[in-house]
Image 1 (spheres, protein in one colour):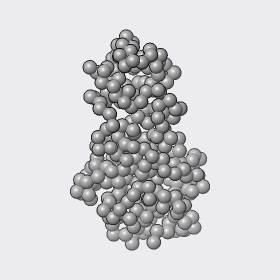
Image 2 (tube, helix red, strand yellow):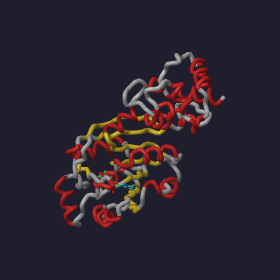
Image 3 (cartoon, helix red, strand yellow):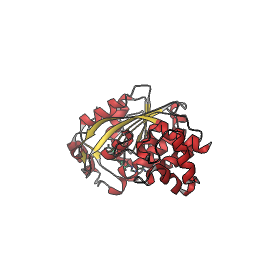
Image 4 (cartoon, protein in one colour):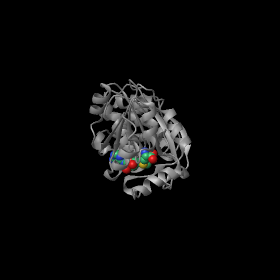
Length: 286
Ligand code: SAM
């Protein structure tokens, strides 16, 4: 039975080990069983799945995952949590605990060893100080991945899901949407965590595409173009592109390509869809 999500039980475990949550590791433990059930449901875990959990903390969500999945690999950076995890997860034979920084781990090897190279699912209540690097590493590294179901700061979830012309739309929206379909599943208020974070959170599921939804001749160049377009939000797209030295594009060339696309010279990057960015990058490269 998974029971750690009840506040008294979390408090009892923390007291038993004299453990104090560390801000530097983004430690906010979930203490709401309905939120835990919601996350696990959103991840659509079956008994065939191999799940990678990033930052298991004291093992609260890991217990839920272990009951649904065939195999769970839980990667925790804080070595002080390892004896606690060995205790709270002792009843589960399908859990492997790894004491490592997720950004330094060869996740492809885990998929290979634990899931014969087939796509794994990632589920996590992420440490907020490194949310974006973790997500981008998971998406860009090309590891076999079915989906990523994660708790993140509400604003970050909004940015990942938003589209052209909205205030939250930017380089992160496009980077995520190039690799995966984002769906916000739930809003989670601060009182569902111990200690309480200062910000609200959302659960978002990113379902990995087998093929990107647009064709980019040079992915790296596409993302350089996207970043340059949002670096100077208040400038026109042509100015933003020509101001980005690493692209090596003149103002005239940028204006010419934008005109070829049938768009006004005053157009801004924030109104561009992923398809338009791909077309723009392909034309600039040609
Ligand atoms: N999963 C637990 C829960 O929901 O109660 C804890 C979530 S807490 C928001 C984030 C967890 O990630 C902490 O246990 C923290 O120590 C761990 N963590 C922080 N940075 C990490 C990293 N680079 N690699 C692996 N784990 C990390």
